[in-house]
Image 1 (spheres, rainbow, N blue to C red):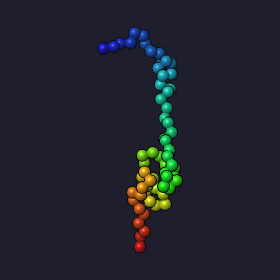
Image 2 (cartoon, one colour):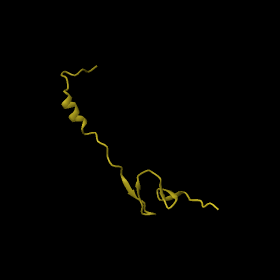
Image 3 (spheres, rainbow, N blue to C red):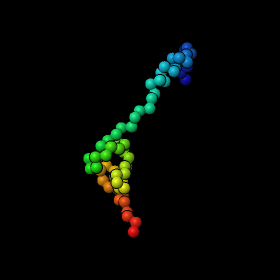
Length: 63
C-alpha cells in the first residue's frame, strides 16, 4: 500500500481543492417553441409539457 513520504500541508491541500466549483447548467433553445430550457429536462410552455421539441402532455381544460 502506498504511503506519502511527507505530510501535505493544509494550504497545499486546499489550493488543490479550490478547482472544484459548481458550474452553471447548460441551456438549450427549443426549435419548436423557441423557449430556453435545461438540457435533458422536460419544460412547460403555455400549459403543455415538451421534451426534445415534442409534446409529452397536453393541458386538459376542465368543463
